[in-house]
Image 1 (cartoon, rainbow, N blue to C red):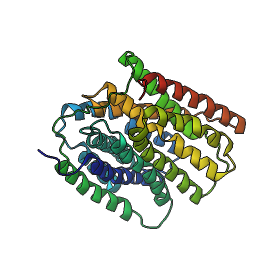
Image 2 (tube, rainbow, N blue to C red; image 1 turned 90 degrees about the vertical axis):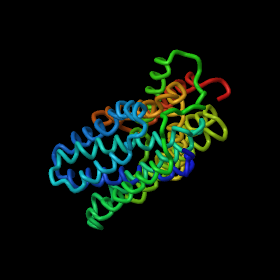
Image 3 (tube, helix red, strand yellow; image 1 turned 135 degrees about the horizontal axis):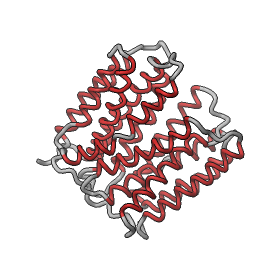
Length: 341
């Protein structure tokens, strides 16, 4: 059946769904669980259940492409918001997040003809959702009204996009960007690069980040970087995008700790590597794009997990951590890419 909407349009729709899901999840964490003495443990459990199972759900989505994983995820999140039992609700909302993520990957990678921009557009919505959910969770502005409203609209949109952008066969042909090294090595290199980038997010020196307005700008820079990273990959290539993201960004990250504008530029540039690593893995798994996407989210958790226990203290250690892990990510990505890509 002929597509009724383009894959780019599906990307924008899923950007809103991603925004809504993350806003609802972080509203839940900051409103329902904020008084718990075990908040950090519960937040870590949320991260694990939201990110690690996505590779498994991705395999299912690749095997059964007609199942609407996005709709299932949105329904799970909506149910969890109104469920009065905190721990069961936490489990449901975490798995709902994972399912919704896979729905987005499915509709932005399948039929994209080698273009990674739709996936970058989709993923960018999450950063805006995270900060929105945090702010709603600590305020008395609207209670459940906005998070539930977002999710009701997302349920409707997930049905619409599944009808108007049918994915009858799970494949993502056209992503021929990886070097001729063994697939296990590619997976390892991509995993390490994503995990390193994930931890760097906690190590970036930012003395200026001490208020609500600054946090909003920080998450906007992250979201904008992911969006433009996908666009740049398609326009100028993956290798040049990686250079801009991991080399040009470094001085802004290392020395912008007291200068908000410089630091925000660095954060935005650094975030552009997300579409690069997704494209690398999809290139190796063209028949399993949702699974490939799930590998990157497992790597995100692997990079986030140490931050629950260890964070660099002091400007010098922050700068060393950012420099070393950025270099590791750059080497891993460049080893993975074909020459000229």
